[in-house]
Image (cartoon, rainbow over all chains, first blue to last red; front, top):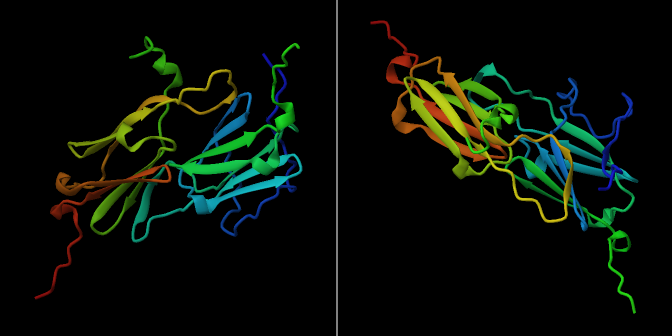
Length: 133
Length: 117
């Protein structure tokens, strides 16, 4: 069992957040719920972002810091909102990446409001079996 | 219940919103990461019930979960609609993880303009 947290949340002090806030977006962000699975080949991060389309998704990478942002489409044309449980805040969350991740090969896919982020490990850090001559 | 009643501890419920237009009511539910075929919609006595299941995908061998925040399993939400609807022409769409159920208002619930003679 590997106890080192390799893909961990990064806490950014208030006022130092990256990512463009839209004018209507002054109420802060909502953290998407995530699952992170680590395998030999790398990590898969799943983030729940209902109402976010492919176009509304922003993934920023700066050094070892990964930021995911999801802008959602709010409202329904020609209709009035009479009861609301959801929030209109956009999604945002920060992660500090394992240095073993090959950032060039990070890929993302959106499927039914769920973001799948694949973060492969660099070839040299993958576990290998060395045969004895 | 498949796992002996422990569903109680990991049950989840989607957030619902209700919109009203001139001719329709629209109920939306936040359901990220479901499959269309795992969502059920029922209308009974002007109560809309949305239920279904979010299934956990099988993990690859040798992989381990280092963070688990997403909830899986069955859910049910019911909403008593504030206006009478006609069950005949209810439509539902599922896009970007949002389910939208459009329910046409019954004739008697629609606003009427009365002309002065």
